[in-house]
Length: 89
Image 1: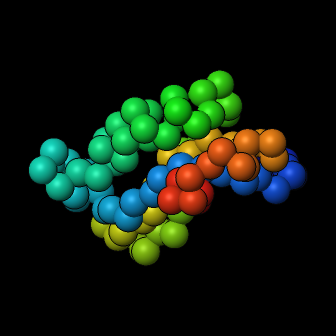
Image 2 (image 1 turned 180 degrees about the horizontal axis):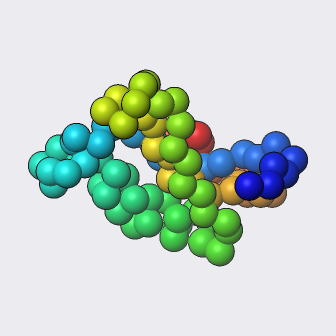
């Protein structure tokens, strides 16, 4: 693995908190609905063509704990005026 320094990013998207046990049942899964919402509502209207990020973070513990998932695109400076406040991550 290579560590690379990158400039600070501003991301626009949506997030959820879940755990692996919830993701095996469609009734409790949150990741698929997160990406569906992102691809249907945020990406095409706001920033189609920008780099897409899937970020998993804030692991509670081991594989049984909760974690955050973010579906987002990179926000360019000139796009800031057209972004809905609720979409900023």
